[in-house]
Length: 179
Image (tube, rainbow, N blue to C red; front, side):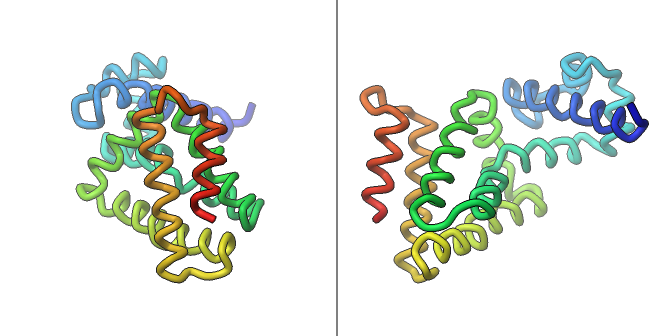
C-alpha cells in the first residue's frame, strides 16, 4: 500500500469515528479523545490530518447533507426517474440513525459555519433548480415548490416514520402527488 493510500485510509477512519461520536454527542459536546478512541488513532494524529476540530466537523457535516445523492442522481437520471432516484437514495441514506442525527446536527449548525451554510444554499437552491429542470423541464416557481415539497416530505418521513406506510408506498404516493 502506498503512503498516499495509507494516509487516505487513516483520514477515513478518523472521519468514520467522528461520525459515530458526533451522532451520539453532537458536534460541540463530543470530545476529541472519544473520536480518537473510536477511530483507533491517537488524539495527536487527528490533528495531523485535520488542523482543528472545526475542520473535522465541517467534513462530517458536509457528508451528512444530501448534496452527494442529488449530484449522483443528476448524473444518472432525468424526468420521473430522477425524482425516484433522489427519493430512494435519500430514504436509504437517512434510514441509518447515525446519518439522521448528523443531518439534524448539521442543519442546526449551518449558520455558524459559512462553508456549511453555502453547502445548504447550493443544495436548496442550485441543485434543486437543476433537478427541477431535468425532472419537469423548467425551474418555474411551481417546479421549485415541487422540489421543496419533495425534500420536505422526505425529511419528515425519515424524522418520524409513519407506522402504517412503507418506504416504497410513501415514495410512490409522493411522486404521484408531485406529478
